[in-house]
Length: 122
Image (cartoon, rainbow, N blue to C red; front, top):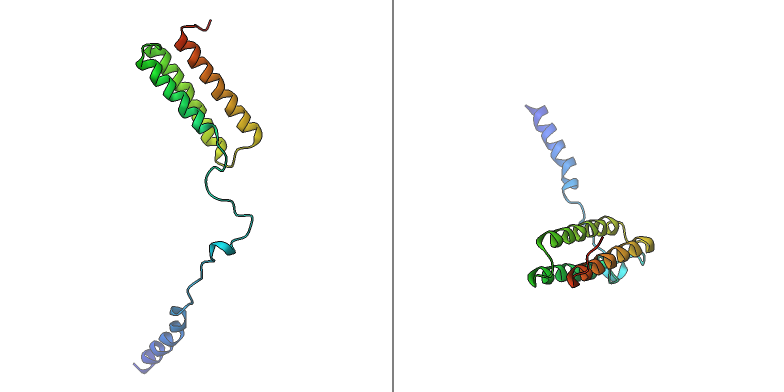
């Protein structure tokens, strides 16, 4: 019994300092290293243009300038470009990726305008 009391007394004496660990301090925002980049896109990306293309497709469908099939195909292409945008932006857009997305978005916008005006692709 005495041994058990000694072990319990010794065990509580050694575990007590571990319970009083100092709370880690969070650095103030001004003390962050200069290489930490802000979260979120800093430049206007292809997201705004892609949103504009989607609105043009919807307006063309509502106005009867696009058939249901044409609108579905154009929306499918917009989703593909949007997927590429998400994959490319996961690790930051390089200049080449940004140019590719801009070209794809421009082609989609021009194709939407052509289909809405009645010009058919061969």
